[in-house]
Length: 171
Ligand code: HEC
Image (tube, rainbow, N blue to C red):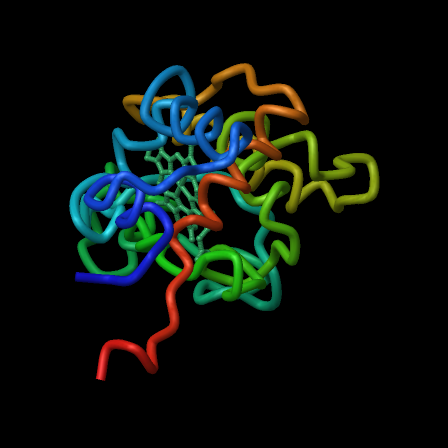
């Protein structure tokens, strides 16, 4: 079993801070993160579309990456990527498949309010069109726009820090 603060809370009755606990309630409750980040690795091992900003040239060029579609040619798979596990996520910046997001709070924000982190006026018409398409695909996910305040996102970040562990301890 992993030696995380969350495991010690669940199995050994150790305390979480108020903020970590509040973040956990949001993660499993209103934030609905556990719809996709579920199971022992906090991943359903499935593919979903989260409109993170795309960084770099992208698999399909010109800053575009169609994700799983590249391998299945199924239009339903456009822009989808596998749900990543969340152990040690506070230590694994930058975030998303292309590493476009340096900040953990903004990576969470991108799930629920993707335009918050994107200055669309600074984009080319091609890039803007691309973002509209990814947002349209995102809106087909079982969970998408959830209202979360800056404080709630910071509580979720605190909760995610309880999933930190030292890989050296597992040997
Ligand atoms: C609809 C499924 C889904 C839901 C709901 C969801 N996620 Fe994700 N999450 C993903 C997928 C898929 C990715 C990777 C997307 C990519 O790389 O393009 C991701 C990426 C992340 C990352 C970045 C991890 C990394 O290593 O790059 C974090 C952190 C994260 N999610 C936390 C959350 C939190 C917190 C919530 C709740 C507010 C949440 N997620 C809700 C599917 C989901």
